Structures are given as structure tokens and as C-alpha cells.
Amino acid sequence: MRDWIQPPLGLHAHPTFSQGENMAEFILTLINKYMNREILHRKNHSPKSLIKLGKLLLNLSKQKPTYIPHFKSFLERADPLQLVCDETEDFVNDSLNNRDKLALECCLVDKLHIINAKESIEKPLVDNFLENFEGLRAREELSTSENFMKMINLISSSSKLFQLASSILKELFVHCDLPLLMIDYIQFVLKHVLSNIKNMNLDLYPTHLQSYVALLRIDSKYHTESSKRYTLDSLSNMYLKNTDQVLILMLHYPNWFEELSNYVIDFI
Image 1 (cartoon, one colour):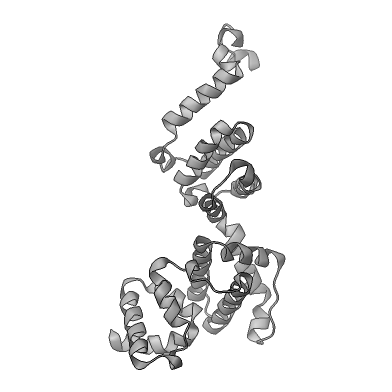
Image 2 (tube, rainbow, N blue to C red; image 1 turned 45 degrees about the vertical axis):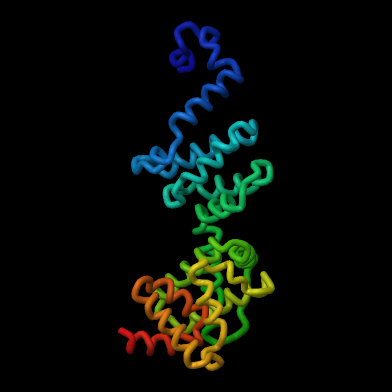
């Protein structure tokens, strides 16, 4: 087989493929020509083939800094949903272990965690909920696992990851027929985020929601009638455009849940 696949005159007659520098330049030419957003987003690329490309660029980047911009470009352009396969976790962990060597920006570190969100965020949230299910029902003190606390550290340090975790918890609330238990569990998660950053930073929320979060942090009974009406009116308008967004806010600030529910019914 080895003899059959060799060029007719042997590799010595094809110096491009036997000289390291020439080969490196050849690979760079191919990358510059063919690795663009359109090609990466083609539906006929399997997640495994894209992960293999990512691993190739990662390994080249570890050996030669010349390839680092191309590895970063791959991460920037790739759709996280197209990179999910059984090799994803190894690729993400290897990339994160070399983040300093590759000088990965915070946004790319976030992107890697988003690519591996099923393992790094969703699984710890679900597992910890199941482990504490009886404790939630009995209103006992809840426990935390090492993976859960790692996840808390992650989502406390990044607005993108915090918002992703909030969306996952919202989906659990919607699909789990245990609304009161889920609200208690979400408050438990938020309590750990709060203790981890010492102050529930508004920056964890999308910019356009930060003013609403500031209002919701004040218990409705301490609002003036006009500020309460303004808050409820604004959230009702938002509810008609983006139900999920308002639901996430209500799960974070459940003291407003009943008031907003009644107001929305009258509003609609």
C-alpha cells in the first residue's frame, strides 16, 4: 500500500511534500483559500469532519504560532451547533488547556464553553437538580457537587454563559411539571452565582434588559404606584414580543410573578 500511494518518482522528486517549510507554506495557502465562513457553514459537513479540522489547526498552532490566527478564525466562524459530536469534549478541553499558549481572547474561551455547553453547563445543572430532588420537596438544605461549583464559576464570570444557563433553566421549568420546585432550584443557582461574584452584576444580563433587572430587584411593595405600573407595563409589552425573555426574568425575580401574570391578563 505504501509503495502504491507514493508518487511515481518518489518523494524526493516532489520537494514541496518533503521539505517542512515548503509544506507549511502549502498548508497555509490551502487554509487561506478554502477556510471561510461559507464553507464552514455548509450543511454537508459533518460535526466530526469540522472537529477534525479544528484539531488539525489546534495541533499546528501549538507547534507554530503562524497558525494561531487561523485556529482563532475557525473558532470565530464555526457554528457551535455544527461542532457537537463524541469528539467535541476532547477538542474543547485541549483548546482550553492551551488557552494561554494560544492567547485566546475571552470571547473565544466563551465560545469553546458554548460548544461544549451540554457537558459544562447543562449536565451539572440537571444532575444537581436530580441529586437534590428530595431535598427540594422537603425544603431541606441543598447540596452541591464539584462539577456544579465549576459550572457556577463559569457562568459567574461570563454574561454569555450566564444567559445560556438561564435559558437552560427556563427550558427545565417549561418541560418539568414541577414549577414551584424549579423556581426554588433556580433561586438556589442564582444564590450561588451571587455569592460567587459578591454582587449580582447587572452586566450578566443583556444590555437592553439591565434597566428592567434593576427595577425587579426592588420588591414590588416598595415601588411607588407609578414606578410599579411602568415596570409591569414595560414587561407586558416585552411579553408580547419575547415571551421567553420575560419568563427568564420572572424566574429570577419570582416575587413579581403573580403581579405580572394578573397584569398581563388584563393587558391582553
